[in-house]
Length: 173
Ligand code: GTP
Ligand code: MG
Image 1: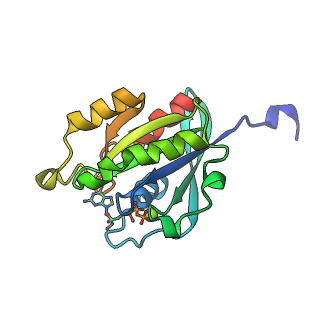
Image 2: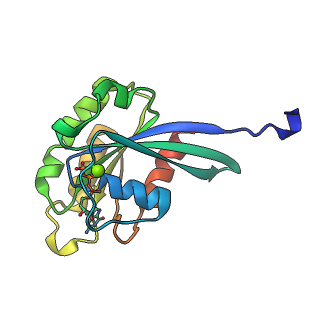
């Protein structure tokens, strides 16, 4: 390959974590394939997909890893986090328990990654306004006190899904 054919490319690993059924796999499928599955099965082990994003005229490839929220189905923890440049920590705005568990996920993330990892707290299922149990302000202030980016998303109606990944990728890049 001659020099003028050389394509500059960046590949960044991003991990998605959070309780079971908060919508991690659907956030990923919405971002990577623009697909949503009403009847999606719980993830077993680890899956990943790549998606390219153009940042400042350069193609940046994100390799996004998704694992199970349930302990018994999870991938080996240290391998999962290894080499990650960014993380999405997801809870479900319609289930308070998933928000209460954010602290535990954050502990795990912090103990397996260094401080430079770009971290985004994601309140998913914001389409479920009628059954909301966690307010926007609660999410915001938790993120602020922990030094995380924050966004509410809906994998179902696509609200902010692209933006959530793009903010993390931009921060890494
Ligand atoms: P585990 O793999 O078990 O950890 O779960 P997960 O976090 O990957 O959840 P998954 O993406 O499989 O979604 C769980 C359920 O929530 C499915 O029935 C989805 O259809 C639904 N769901 C996911 N995202 C949304 C959303 O934004 N809004 C609504 N209303 N439902 C959603
Ligand atoms: Mg899943």
